[in-house]
Image 1 (cartoon, rainbow, N blue to C red):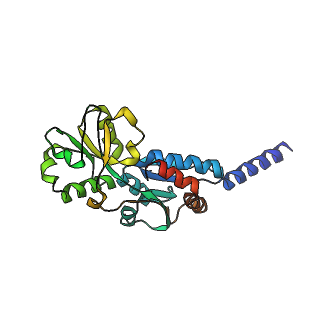
Image 2 (cartoon, rainbow, N blue to C red; image 1 turned 90 degrees about the vertical axis):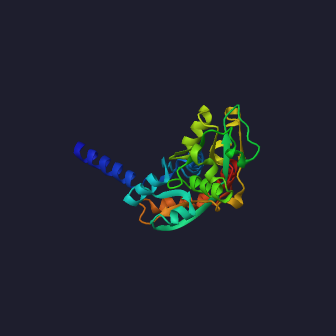
Image 3 (cartoon, one colour; image 1 turned 135 degrees about the vertical axis):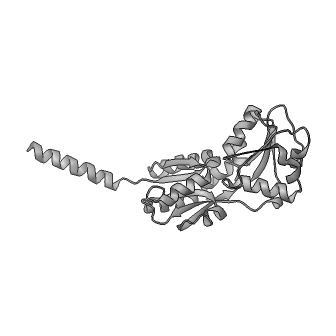
Amino acid sequence: MRRIILTLTLVLCLAGSALAENLVVAAGAGYKKLVTDLATAFEKESGIKPELSFGNMGQVTTQAKAGGVIDVLVGEKGFLEGAGLSFNGVAPIGKGILVVAWPKGKKLAAASDVAKPEVKRLAMPDPQKAIYGKAASQFLEKSGLAKQVADKLLVVATVPQVTTYILSGEVDAGFVNRTDVMGLGDKIGGYLEVDPSLYAPIEIVAGNLAGAPNAATAKKFAAFLASKPAKDIAAAHGM
C-alpha cells in the first residue's frame, strides 16, 4: 500500500511539472530594467514567472543559436533579423532613443559638445555588439565628429558599462540609451537626446524563437506586450 501511495505521489509530481508553464526571456543588458518590469507585470497577470538572461547582444544571440533554452529574445529588430535566427513572429515593444549623458560636475549644451576639448574621455558601447554603439557611430560619422573624437573614445561591450563609467566620473560623457539613464536623476549630471535623423531608427521587439521549448507561453508573452499595461511600462522607460 505504501509503495502504491509513493508511486501515485511521484506520478502526480511529474504531471504537475509537465503542466507547469515556463518562459525564458533573454535581452541586451541595456534593457534589463525594462524587461524585468515587463516580466514582473506578466507574472502578475498570468502567474508565469519568466526566467531572465542579460548580456551584450553578441552573447545573447550566441546563446539563442545554441537552441533549446531561450524562448523569447528582446533586441533591436534589424539586429535580430540579421543574426541568422528564425522567429515565429515578433512583438513590438517600443522605439529606442540614443542619448549622450555626462557625470555630475559636467555640462553639455548639445550632443556635438563631445568634440570639445573639455571632454577628454568619451565612452560608447561596441558598435559590433550593441545597437546603441552602432547608433553612436552613425551619429559621429554623419555629424562629422568621428575624427575629432577618435583619440578620446573608450569603447566597452554594453550600455550599462558606459553608464557605470559616467556614474563614477571616469569619463566626461558617454553614449547610452534613454531607458538606461532616465531614472538616475541627480546621480549623473544630465543627458541630451541625439538628433534621431543622424542614426538609423531603433525598433525594440521581442522575437519568439522558432523551436522554442515553451512556444505556447512565448505566444502569451507576445500577446501581453500588446496590452496597455505593457505599453505603459515601455513608455515609463522612455520608449
